[in-house]
Length: 601
Image (cartoon, rainbow, N blue to C red; front, top):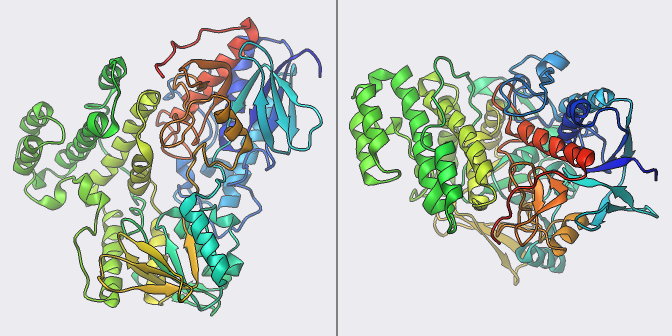
């Protein structure tokens, strides 16, 4: 290897591609015409990576509209580097803006973005692609790092390493290992958490019952691949949509903690004045939490601020767009809401006095537990009840009369921006990310219409909330039940965990991240890699940022709320990529750069 400066980027999916774009944008200013080698390491195609690879079923969709996805910065991004605008998926592909693109279509866009970023590199920057897996990183804090690759005789030498590995496989936890052993003893089938497109779904037999634990986006993919993917088709449209089976489908019995699918994607745009955010969970509140000398607890110290902030977004929109459903002047409500303590009886009384109809009030706990305390007389009554719930949710999320829901979505994006700043001080845990996804990242309306059609056809059966899964050693079966139908059990010879693996360092399938953790990288209680939110530097257990190791993406404490960025929404991921790229180039140029102050262990 020559004596040029060297950067190794591990992971060439959307995050690695976005980081490469920011390197190309900032190189002229910060590094001039000095030579640099950039190594991109990923066994999957650069640009789309694994999740968005073009070689997958076109039946699988993105979960965002084509007009809502961009890989390019604009003037709303708070960053020091230059803005380099570019097209959305809709503008680049010619797809109608409100269409949900297929995964292969999104993969083609990402490949083009990667090629454009590569072409934007100056002639003195040489890009090397390695279609393999990075196994471990070694090297002193103040010296060159060595990145060992699968199948490589010698390591890559790097002045710094950037981990943009995206979503990862995971080793099964004790419960999953026990279920797999049970299945093996009795000749059953157990599919642990995985990316649905990579699961061996061919092993699920036609016509047989299958227990499915998980009702989020992984279930939607499973539903699609086991119905249309096996030759079924839909006829009609809207409420009259009918599923015509091929006869090769299994019967899917699905349940989860909530027992309902994620909230349907909102089917209209938020017009008029947007809620003025942030208001109750902004820079001032975040700074105060960061200045605390003691621990910051998410539920005690942060959640009440989030609750009040989302309520503010909701009621601002309700008063502005639907004043006939309110009983106070906005100025009076604003003053009372502002002075009331967060998440308490006083705040609830303020809301009750101003908003007569309880259906117009925001109750986040009720949203998170929509079926708590509800009991059904039979499994058939549960099917009808869930179809009514899904149909009502589908109608509401496409009705601008409930545009306060869209304002809450805007509030969620604002909240996530503040949580990124708190990343080094507070661990929201898996509940928050799941709750955010449930409210903000639900399936498109057409998918929910398909789910209703599949339910009416008997291909999908609902199990209910608080799902319990047990094993019956004597009979050699999986059994599932829900408190919603007491005493009723559903039995099957197959169990599918419809969720992606949790991004924990202890159970990650990445040997590189496991070794990094074992060598001293700090992790949260939930298993996320702790990074400094300012520039993505990996923090060690003593709180010191590693000067030559960076990490960006869902395996870190600086993960953003969604996979992709909407145009003109600030783009937290873009700002992170820019800050990390500028810190890296400053290090290459000067041999060192200012580091954030150490954190307490």
